[in-house]
Length: 225
Ligand SMILES: *Cc1c(COP(=O)(O)O)cnc(C)c1O
View 1 (cartoon, rainbow, N blue to C red):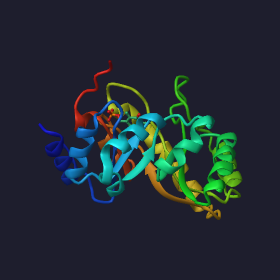
View 2 (cartoon, rainbow, N blue to C red):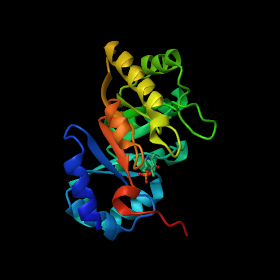
View 3 (cartoon, protein in one colour):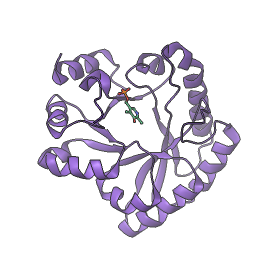
């Protein structure tokens, strides 16, 4: 099946209120162009340098989609990243939030950001520990920062062959999302719950996700050089 067929089938199957972010890592500009021509609205990139190269190759098509940063954000790359992305999904500490704030202020713009939660507390992964109190504390601190708006929660879930194993973790992420939203903090609005990938998006949506990040299921298996 082609990228176009894959994307359009998924767009038909996935409820309208769920945003599909296409994870573009390792893909060529032609593949991403095909996805955009098929109606893709949101692209995710894990690396700042790859995003820059991709955007240069895409030309005018760049402005037809929103760009999401979904990789590990390094402080020394934030300046370069800011003009390339519309949303930053992976803020996971006050230190990072403050580094982001200082640099975003120089651009005089406000960016939506999500808090990345390591919901299954897997040691190999980045993200905030899943303890609610800690997450709330960070959200309260970030409410003071003027050049970012906390608009959601992002989580990777868990890597397991059976997506049902992820269900309790997705449910826990949803609870954090709802509790934070209920606080009605200034500058913190829980609009987006970003969870679910190619193998787990159905379960994630059943548990309340309204943004899935899909790579393999649209573009095919990744080949690493
Ligand atoms: C690669 C990636 C995805 C998509 O993974 P697939 O299994 O290919 O769908 C989603 N989120 C992040 C953060 C990724 O790096």
